[in-house]
Length: 228
Image (cartoon, rainbow, N blue to C red):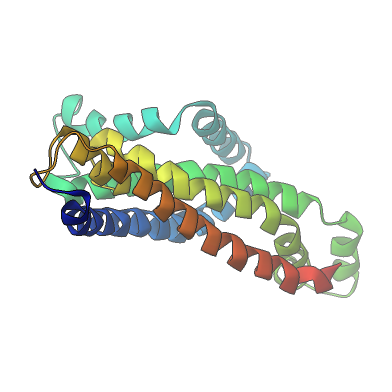
């Protein structure tokens, strides 16, 4: 039977591979959810009633149901109900399905943060911009957006840190993220079985990653202090 020191390189190698998947899911989700959330927010505030109802309905459904259920439905529904597995097989298909689920989920949460940030900017500033002859587009990008960013950074930071931990839910569709990799050594992986200590190492990965993000987001908040 291998000793702890003999098992350590194997475990760290597997966790590094799993963390890479976690990191990829995190980055892709942010790149997709940040702009999509703004689009949904505009839709939810639109004067076009059908668009407003659809966007608010989507937000209500996504925020009112667990992300785990959304993952299962998005991944299995096409194949089991429509008889068309659009995601394909293997790890790539699971990764794409997870990305879609996470992007839609977090876009809806970001949309509510955006909406709150936009509506928190005094209406008088928009009216002043219109008096000066500015278009609505110019008012948004030159007046509203800068103040909105300052207001939304704290709640967005919380959601981003939550996203890091939520990526672990992707293992429900057998995506091989870092916790999946650590848990595999309990069941038997690469000649190691019945080992729970790799899960403690996964916690260290999360702590370090969240720690780095916390520092970066705090520095961003400090740089935006001049908007006060």
